[in-house]
Image 1 (spheres, rainbow, N blue to C red):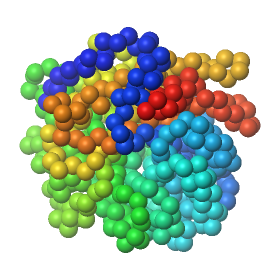
Image 2 (cartoon, one colour):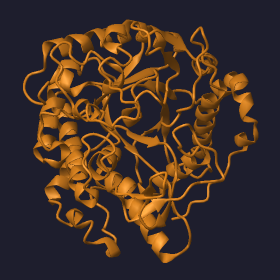
Image 3 (cartoon, helix red, strand yellow):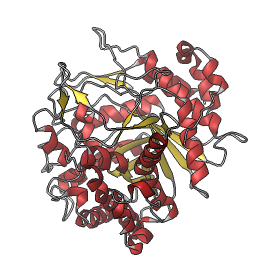
Image 4 (tube, one colour):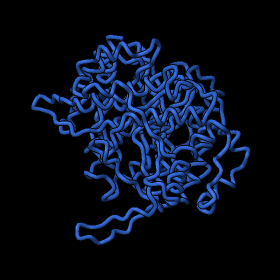
Length: 485
């Protein structure tokens, strides 16, 4: 329960040297190892009122006062719908193997049901044709958190799983001949925890343990969508992306250890076990009441969820250190602020630096996440690593140039640690690490943080109506690394 990461020898290299060692990094990439960059529809597309697009839960959420840190919204964002040709040109210049994007569910199905909208179809036709023309493989996510607002109850409603399957089949028939890979869901654990349990993300529900049905229904939707894509005879590989968080207890006290085990179950095993093993994990005895919905699962649902996969996506951001007792937030005057909270809280990793989001910057824990995955699940399909969390305080100069060595360090150290962890004799040698996806291509609307946390390899000027793009230093670093494979 308390993983002790081992630092790879590469960590001994001073971080400031990474940007000068792009060529050496290129030499480290195995033959056939796929390097991709990603975006998601709601975060970058803009054109929120164009072409018949409907509202998603995030449109509704961001219109509520106080929900988004800077009071912004994604109605224009990076305006990718209008600038997609510039963005595919950036991808070509970067030299990546693949681009991972997401279909905007409400751009294709404004009300979450029915025939696909012609304007949405036309946009994604243009995008896929541009990618094909530039020789860039494409991976599409069917749902990256943008559930249609018209589907009442969202993922708390079992019917949404069926609507998702219908949507998957229709999209599969429309684009199944041109996509190289399909992701059903992106990080369903984040949707359940932040969207339905704590209310910090859309749709803003704060149900704590009563949010668990949203986990079940997302996973059921995943299984039904896999079946629907196969029924549509898509040619691309099919998988999903789950977040994996290495969890440790803050102390050896029984309470801390129990709550650490609970959190590990909630964010990791609750989502991976049904997909990879065909069962929910056994509820922990002290929390049987809170986790009771897991005991009531229909075995037929689990058979649907447990579909054969062509690949499995592991999204890593940071580890968690858990201690008993709820989080207590206070005003500047020290008065408690009523807020939904788990019966546990997180202790800081003071031995590690953080990104500008406050995420723990500890590359060695990506090896822990991979080793735990290998230890818990035998006969895994090829694994693709998604590296999230590369948000730093970027400062653009007068020419929009951004020098971001911290992002270079972050991405390089995490990738090399993952490669080291999966070589023969290493802690996660059983994993076939087939590729990495860097988040993200563009600065964009970063959910509840608005535009305060840029994560892109490309700077976007949100004060400019043209949304001018300027590659950052990290873009040039990755470009050089890929050119030296």
